[in-house]
Length: 437
Image (cartoon, rainbow, N blue to C red; front, top):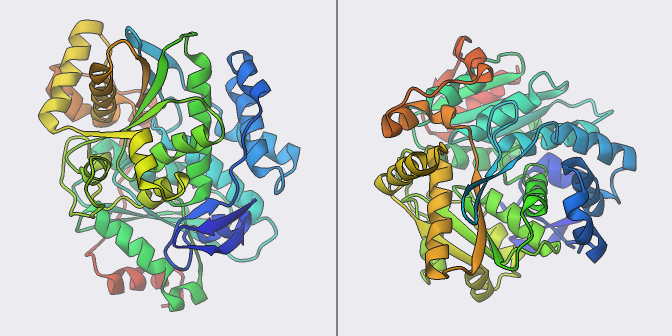
């Protein structure tokens, strides 16, 4: 499989280069040159397939030219080591629970796939890979744990000081070994800008091999399509149209769903659901895309004012803005909307949503109100509610139990390097970590 840059369709690279580089030299995101369509037989057999069996066929269709059957099986087995159950919350409304992995967030799928694939592709290389990760919460913990103790790989996590939950922070600041956490005195967009700048710096790239494990990397982004196939396979048979609502910040997860649809998955409508960081819903409503400063909310993993994956979404629709707006509806909600939804669902059904899942639920409900009895819908519950315990407890008036896996992280000692948001300071830290200062 070959990949092109969203900024230059003539810049084409191999799978290995796309994964190891992460970002194209022109700052474009890598996209598959050809997206395979899966055969009708595959979709007819979906309800009878296990999660892993679905994974073998989907990843096989995408990577069969680059990986052996044994490698594809090893990759899928490592990635799909836990379930993603589809839970009915209300009539025709289902939650896809993506928080049953090691760090209790949907990013466990992509991080495990990325670390395993990168290790496969780099086998036999003498150079150490440095993975730079900007995080607004869950990416840092998933990537740090996915790459923890992976030989030949060092992970540097950048996160905004005071803007991630304590539980999220503990999951990537207490590991040590090959994981370094940088606490940036800024917002997520500052962290993301530093990472992008590092990829373009000639001196750094001469001294070290840099890559990313954010959703800008195809190895983090592509495997997320697997749980869309799986969710669809577990829906009860229906004549209604299918809608999927994706709580979105950097919009990689939504892009993975659209990739699944491009491969033939019959999803009729996607919903880009977000908080008051509303640049994509505004675009879908007819405005020009315009990056803005991010605003802090209780759904902090979506506090992104300049989502990197926007241009990947456009590319999936052939850069046809009208088609993009037709196939994807956008909604945004403030903290009060989010908390009201959490309370309503808890009182009416007993189901506990985290603030991100609640935003996804609200987006789905908005679409269903506009089209009564037309849709059956899935919203993505992207993280265990306990990862946002203070918000959930305060909103619902409960003391939510913390799963043992999270308790274990809380016992660790936080170790971070504090820094401002200047690239010069960041570059100095990277060179110091490399032992060449």
